[in-house]
Amino acid sequence: MSLRLASFGLFSVVLLPIQVFAGGPTITNKCKLGTVNTPNNSAGFLMDEECKNAYVLPPSVGKVSVSSVQQNQNLGFCPALRLDQEAIKESAKTKLVIIQKINKMIKDYEPMQMQRDSLYSTLVEKKANFDSATLIYNKATAKEKDLIDQVTDTKKTYDRLVLLGASPDDIKAAKDKYESTLATYKTFIAGDLTSAENNYNFAKKEYQRYNDEYAYYDSKYVESIKPLSDLQKMVDDIEESALNSYKKYVPLEGLTATMVFNINSAGLVSEFSNMNRNLNLSWQQLPIKDAYFIASLKNDSGMADASVTTVIDSSIPGIKSQTVNNIDVNSPLPTLHDKEVAAQFPFGSLSGKVRLNLNGACVYYTNVNTPAPGADIQNISANISLNVNYTYQAKQTRSFTAKYNFYNMFTRIEKKSTSGGWFSTSSVHSVVEDKNSSDWFDLKFDGDYIYTKEEQDDIKREERALLIDRALRQFAMMNAGSTPPGLVSPPTSGVMYAANSLGKCYHYYCQIGSFVLGTVGSIFGSSNAVATFKGKTNIWVEDKVTEFQIIDRSGSLTFSK
Image (cartoon, rainbow, N blue to C red):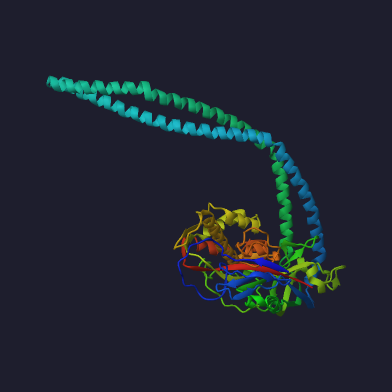
């Protein structure tokens, strides 16, 4: 297969000559390669600044085989787990029926709600008018008191001069001032004060009328939707029951499998080189910053169910298995001004051990020493989605000053999470996409870079995504590994030569599907990781990036037999 490619950089910018570190994969470059022949199983490649070196991503699919299995006595709980799973499936059907009924009821209540909302809008308007009239009336009464004091003072002065037998000129001046003050007071009463008082009384009457009317319809509406609230509670109870079942079995070990993983990255590099000799490029494996092994149960359609993790932990050379236990709350805080990380390429032919919990193990065993009919653990990838989610670094031309507050960022994300602490890729994406982010993020452009308004918005969105991504990888639990959804747009204009299987989002939270905050100890054990994190980050941090930026990009590979 072949691709017609042309790379012109990510943004239209005007740059002064700058010094950047030499070599390494880049996101912004001006390589015009023409036609590139792409091997099967390719996830793409990046170019360097000089357009001489091509860095090949790991393949999309690797091979896996199981060499040995050590069962755990917890397999004796498999019958109970299956009963729970069947109960959850049935309750899920009930939940769907209830939700459909709720949606119909919501539609039935729509006219009443629209009338209630209309009344509320009018009430808000009347309240604003009443507040304004009250303010004006209070000012008028205050002015009336001031004018009364002036009339009283001038009258006293006039009377005193008459009593003391002052000169006619002084008496006349005092009398004129008194009469002038009195006339001003009378004019104010007949005009401004009366108008303010009338407006106040009218606005108060209108506000009270609409307030009483809204209170009536609101109580009627609340009473009418009580059955809806009861149904919603039933849905919540079903979800809580499913979560409790999940909590019960996910920490229990079912078996330990010794597996051989074959990720033929070297062979892929050779294929690229042999198929593109005319390009005169040096083809090499892309350096990997880190890699995590994640597995989840496949559903009936054969797709990974990101909500059901199957791994307790794993021991695979060069590939990590993140758990709450190795979340380090004392590690340096994430930053937008990251440095290059030298890491050994972890892929090739590897042998490692994977501990499956009962969610995974009971797929292959119905009890201790009792294999499940129709499921062969030697073909483990048929029932469990085995994935390695990896992160690599690349540079891009950037110059800006950013300020951010991680405490406020996490508060936003927590609002998007479920009652159990889970939050999905789409929830994170909504925080990334929200331009109204001044409560936790602000970015000012520096240097001789000219961006359009649209390009500025794109850069700000990318930097928000990068910052959130690094924070989640450090302080949240990753769960499962589903197909990356196309949420955050990738760099345009050919800077990334990727196969469709890579998806359209290069951030780690897209490769995962869902996270759980480290504070949710009820599932994964006690942890105050996020609480500690938030406790020390309720401050604004300033981060300055000059000339170029080292960014993280993530990808995913899966395994088959």
